[in-house]
Length: 251
Image 1 (cartoon, rainbow, N blue to C red):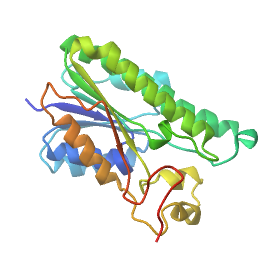
Image 2 (tube, helix red, strand yellow):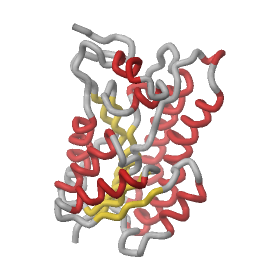
Image 3 (tube, rainbow, N blue to C red):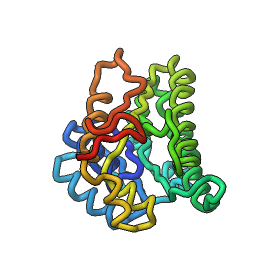
């Protein structure tokens, strides 16, 4: 029987690339995101790889919506083997003393609370089955800080701590927890961060070759494909041109 993977934030970037990668590995997919039309298109594309797909459109920041979406799954679909907590965002690059509190709440609600909401719904299924794998998409910003990164960095530091705690609490049930921490990856990330300003988003990746969603998806595919007794706990990946969040070699 094919395994089932749930991928959040599946409508673009790393999430979409991960759903595609897992479909090529034979996983049946639950794809989650807010943009329903994009989910429908992705569902069609994934099914062409011969796998079954369930699309769930909801706002991860709303605990009621999360509960309703997961509760709507049939018992067969609730047998989730892999949860990829990909949904996340950055909003703004203000200094903390000039920060937009709405942006702070958006980042905390998505990157921290949303991850917790969906994990809390899925983990009991894995505990009951004494098997499963949770992949949390963190960031190099989860171990570093940089100018204007304040609350975004804090939210990813939280993902780092949550991932380590999950690993400890779930180890007795044979459940793997992997944190993957990408550096600069050219997706919709910067476009969202700069509120749709295309020029500002492009400058982030100017004069270098950044990661793309497919690069991170390859890491996820590798991690979930390892033997049952092998777990990658933490994996940081950057483009060759990036040494730290602030040290980058631009040509």
